[in-house]
Length: 515
Image (cartoon, rainbow, N blue to C red; front, side, top):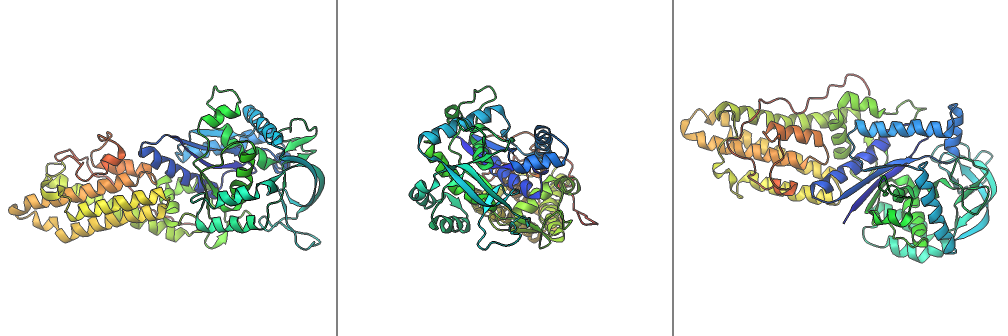
């Protein structure tokens, strides 16, 4: 069965920011983990390119909407390539096939009797592309998210009859695992309990959008259009624009990973639309938290936005992936603190794991003919590091399944800490001076190298490049025999295998100035 995983389709009003990088790294780690377990994965990302905000932004830039979206979508593609994101599909909502899929989907919803005409009045945020509830009319009502003036709208739109799906959505959100984490589920439950109201799915006099078939002058509301990108993306390159064919390629989605600010669209509106069209809702929606910087929301006006390209250049992908996925509990808000970030990378990766590998390989090479030492009793399941590795494997795989990258990373670091402690306690640099201790020293070094190998394998979803360097340092330039899960078994490191000259697998971060 295919595991279909999606990021949001990122709105192209600006270049990628750290928040979009964070979401995409979460999905990349999940996709890597699933693939390592042998699952078939379709990992989808892309860009949402229609709507009034895009039209105005393009005009302000002196470009046509198409030229503007071509340029910014290209930025997203380029950034994901630089970050070594393993995408299977990249969808743009300006794709001609997407237009046909959206229109076919709409016809099915209309045939279900779920499209009605109505008048839409209210305060509208162009940046959010949605109407806002303003309890008390102010002289200049502001969007609570963007802190910009709202615009008054009064127009005839087409509405989706969301109210007809009150019971169906209530039942869906009670389904175990549909919305995670629990705090996000409670938010949706509270929203739905207030009673679902029909919502507008079209705009008039907006040329930059997909025309609504049979309704002259109407273009689709950007959210109605964008959500269907998850389905269009499933089409193979040579497939025709066929809704049923797209769904047969991997729908329903196994998991949508999104920021918590767009949870309502994915957990309420989108499932109801799918049910109306006779399609299955996604299996799960995960709403993660926001990232701040040094305790403050990032914004251009504050001058504290973290440029992903600069961050990548200064620190490398391993450091950023580890720092974001290890430090932030998935689902919670996270705060990027440069000193904490630096300390975390240096302590976990350079010191605890990198130094363990370096000194163990150095001793093995010096005393055992530049090779992996004999195994001896180190292969026993009762060996303290064998037990530690088994415990780490169990905890890490369970954490990846939840998913909980913070817990997975902590379990891996704990295994390295135990291996370092074992090495210090056994002090092979002292005992090797006694000939009768040589075999025991070999066993001890084998156990430490093997524990490091298991840790390196388990790190792969989070820091694939560092994982590869660790295994190469252990002589595993070629893939080992069996699956990734098989390779996690204790004792798979071959004795007498040549060990390359040790080089640091992770350089310490030395950041002299703010990023």
